[in-house]
Image 1 (cartoon, one colour):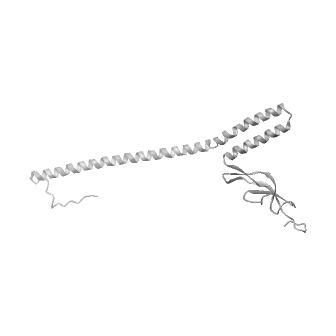
Image 2 (cartoon, rainbow, N blue to C red):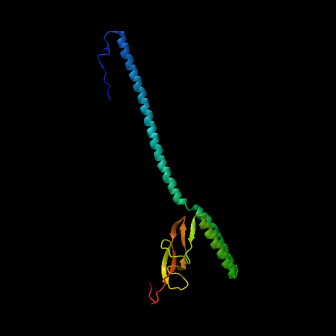
Image 3 (cartoon, one colour):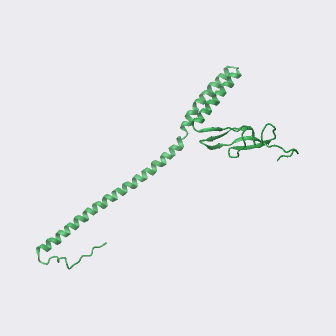
Length: 189
């Protein structure tokens, strides 16, 4: 952007009058000072821009590193809670070698199961209760159909594998057998 000066109101440089030469010189000095001030401001703005870009790049690198660490060490708490189970299994195996008491061994296994389920529940894992519930394809996987007078139609009769959710999200469906009532003619509905 260029400034348009009215030449009629400005005195000519060097017209022989000392006040005119002084005014032009003062205007020129003022413009040079203003130019110098704006150059410094531009340099400061450029410096801030360069620093902001560097900060952004450092943030991106730090975020990628944090994400990689979260993936790499994200299971640390779960694993830390499962390590006592391995210690308990080792003790149970050592005890089983020294003893022939099957009932004590069974109780030990039951205690291990409770300990494992407690650790899983602590991290948001819940077992799906399926037996004698209505079949729900969202949480059950039907492995077979059976005829049973003791159960309602479309009711879960047996559970082959438990299903689990993690914080309400399905991890694994329960594998079940489902009652399918037969009609009087002996043909499946």
